[in-house]
Image 1: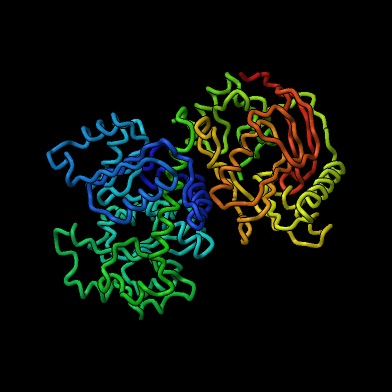
Image 2: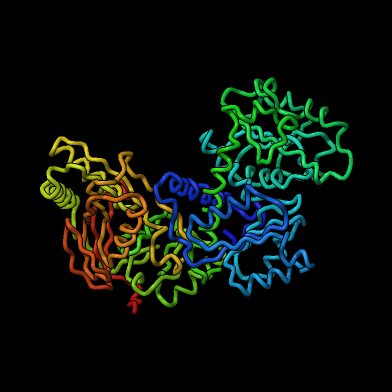
Length: 307
Length: 248
């Protein structure tokens, strides 16, 4: 494994499996009376969040704390960023405070990559623009493997706003490396131009794809990033690409429904689907903590010598 | 499983498929290991820098010089049977006993002992595994390593007599870490320790309650325990560390 986790492409198949296996062991900690391990005692993890987030930030915070690391939360609002401090100056400040790892979320694609050049600690990408969100892909893969017992040959259909989704890109890269067959289903306007170079197939018809799907992953329509009309109306989008109970019935019996959250109930996913037994949405949150513990342990748990 | 690296577990076999020929821990090899880890990432399971003590241990294909078997399969079998009887004597017939093996080779030993306890006394004794990787005191001396499997029997350990099982007792640091790990899982009534081989050179105030064989060794020697479940054969081998990187 590399020193930083910036892209799912940084992970070889072996690295990814090591993270998933480690997460599997660490998941047990959640069931114990004392949900804490002493492993990262004395290490400092900084959560550097330039974008709003509840799930991911809390998840990283819980993961670091369960490993006994000290956590410093930094959000752009109410910090010197609001006074105009640059990312680099903020990075140097963190460096001076001795951060062993920086978990960064930023609206600009590539911000974690830049940061990695400025700090000595490990950088973990917690979402950069429309680029990547590797720990989300890891927890999705972990959830699939737990529910369905395998990843090799799994048919995964990712549906919706691929264009603005960092989750989709990370998932395509990671799941491909782990041997799953990934296909994207979206309106043509919500697919990135370069999607032809991604290791996945592309379709436009959700009803045709669902019967051949083991995992359907619904993406959030990211209205806040949409500065143009990508589809005529929300209602039309929902009719063609939303997952309701009728569509869910097209899935094979064992298939699961995933969503990275936060959901727009009634847009890309109907409430009855989100709350059904096939939905893994709550599990994904639980698994997120285990997977992030595994990532932090594998990046920070060993010697500094080889870093 | 890459958990053949318990601290104080000096009986590691050559890990399968991992950088054979490297003599980890010797001053010369440290640079190699460190740079290999840089190139290969965190180098999980691969040999990394370690403290002087570890240099005396067999790992990663270290060549054993003049190795000899000190326990044959029959002797291992008899030693385990004797330990099982001792456990029954000291625990009132195995009542409330939970056997917890420390990965890798403590786990099959714990299972074998539990089977013997059940056979002799007709009472089933739960056996499990306790990985101590996250509790080691030398984590920062080497690259992050893969975790072993922890499997605590469903009934838990509260109020039970936990018998920790490991293959070799050396510095005592593995056992110290295991005691820390136990504390986070529950509150046993008592904790005892069973080992197949006690080779001496303790660094902590720890002793075993049940010992298969006391084996006087020099720190330059290497003790390896092979078990059929993991290594396809049973044996305890004593050899001399060819990389005479006498620690400290």
